[in-house]
Length: 406
Image 1 (cartoon, rainbow, N blue to C red):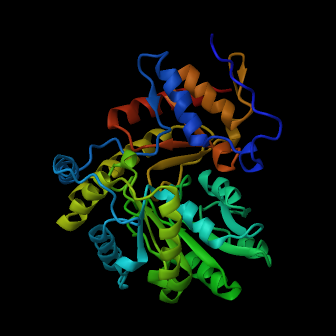
Image 2: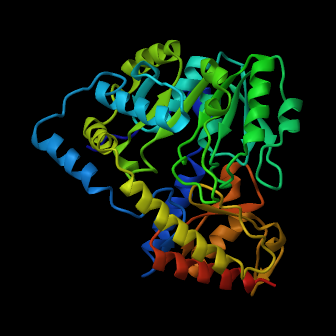
């Protein structure tokens, strides 16, 4: 006799997950995959990872680790050699001395962020979160008992520091800074970072500094870590980073954080009870690349993205009623589609960014992410970290479809 599934009793689900929805980018990716099964050529611009194989060094190191049976737990916060290699790399980039004791390797950047919120926030503490945001930020903050307090970006993509100051309260605990920014592609200027640092010192706040896209800046400048500009901020800054984007190993789940020793000690305890160590095989792959002291893969990735960015901007310049995206860093085109809302193709009238992404998905076979996933109802996000031919074909379809709206 087949057993019947018992319904969840009333009140059986904790409040912390009742409001929680899947990631908007994940939902957009699933919609794209569903469309792919219906169409012979679907082009997916939703996914946030490089369409490149990892470097041969990384792949061979991982294969060797498997062949040699190096599959046991590492230290809870990562292989000591990998933590040292990360400290060396960040030291070289920032001209500051970082030690392995200030590094924790995590199972991707998301656990690193969760550990930061769990370490810093008591129930009701507030975090300044710029909009548009990566949806994981406010979701995790709420799960950890905190309260996201949203502030604006300006039209030029920079943080609106006046709005940040306006939203500081006696409950504010953390400033969140994400540069290069996902989803906007903005790279924050030095003066903006200086002003945010001043606010942190003035109000005795922590900074969570997410730099997962630091390898990809396309405007002739370079990414700046906030402690490089203001070294005294080190004692109040937690840096979040990952190998997922820079080395094209998103599925391997190897991220890391840099933080004062007291934070790393707390993270060691948290990680020991939540995920244990990060993927050991992935750790050995990342370690091999860092120890080789070569930038060949990241250079190849930057060249790939720069060419895609140039060609993508050229195609998108043909859009009617849509301003060119910033695309200063990372690998996303973030388009303000406000002037397309209310327009019509046949009997279909576009009434929201979600509706536009659905229209593009179903009518043109192109997957994009609606800005509603980022707290912004007037935009869509397009990844250009795809194959060049797919980028060209997909953007041309998108432009034709949007320009057909009347």
